[in-house]
Length: 194
Image 1 (cartoon, one colour):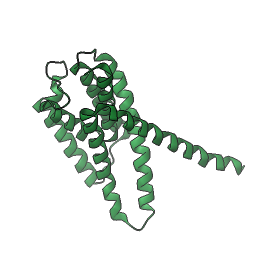
Image 2 (cartoon, one colour; image 1 turned 180 degrees about the vertical axis):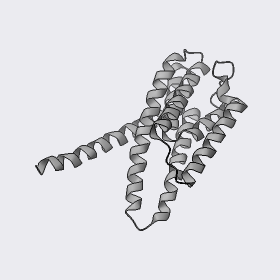
Image 3 (tube, rainbow, N blue to C red; image 1 turned 60 degrees about the vertical axis):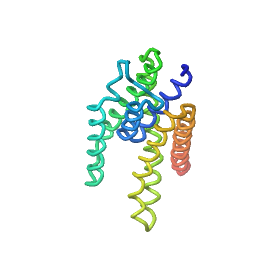
């Protein structure tokens, strides 16, 4: 794999934990353990496919699922920190897998995870607001399922078809642009009333 494909893969596997943290990192670790599209073995990031790391990610999935079921809102700063760390590790591991320096992956992975986090928050918060405005409260339970599926799709496709990760990054950018534009338009209307 050349540098372009390693960067492509790194983008996708770091955007995905921004959408939902633990499940995409778990999928990448399982794929790496099976040597399907990625293999962290022989690098400083070989722990990303180790049994203890995968067990830790399973525990993270379980704890966040339990918190959601009990309607416990986790602090945003904690969610951002987990997403950034996982995104940075995954991007750096993708570069190291191909023999490139992992150092740029730390910064790039953190940025991609932040973009994924901000876009997912804007998108799914807007969807939740629309759903709560309807008379179908049971639809709200599916929002988390869709978020998890989106994160898994981004991670899996980024490993198996790395250039597709640019579509995920572009979609995140578009969501942020539209969200910002709508927010500005809302406040513009308030300025007119003065």
